[in-house]
Structures are given as structure tokens and as C-alpha cells.
Length: 76
Picture 1 (cartoon, helix red, strand yellow):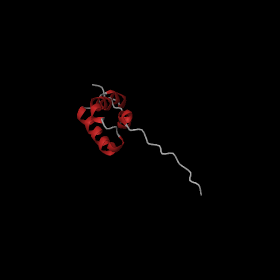
Picture 2 (cartoon, rainbow, N blue to C red):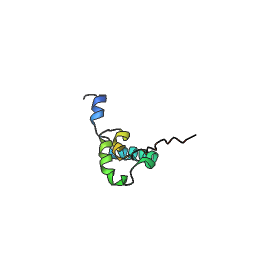
Picture 3 (tube, rainbow, N blue to C red):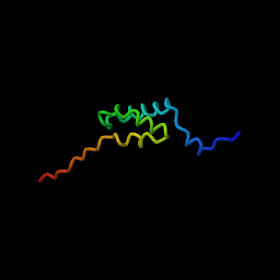
Picture 4 (cartoon, rainbow, N blue to C red):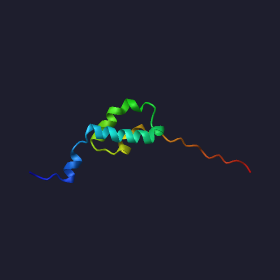
């Protein structure tokens, strides 16, 4: 019997329940910054999380772009 190494552990997919838990935690904390149809991407996000991609990386394509407000100088 061989002992599993940390490299072996990294290759093993994450259980779906654990991935779903990570997804829910990230979703709750970042809902305001995610696109409105995020639920339509649930399966692809779960698949990435199961492959041990970080939640930040898995959700990155679904984050709303930041709104940049130009600074306007006003005359004194």
C-alpha cells in the first residue's frame, strides 16, 4: 500500500458537495458583483471547482466589469 502524496491529492477531483459548498460561499459573498444570469453558468463553475480551480478563478469570467467614473475637474 502506498501513501498518498500532496501531489496525488491535488489531482483528485473535489467531491461535488464540497464544490457546491465553495460555490455557495463565494456566491453569497460576491453576488452584487456577479452577472445577472450567473445561475445559467452553475454547471461550468461547479466543473472548475471540482478540478480544484480556486473560486476566484472559477467565477472570474462572470464578474461584472467595474464601472469607471471619470473624474471631472470643476472650475474654481
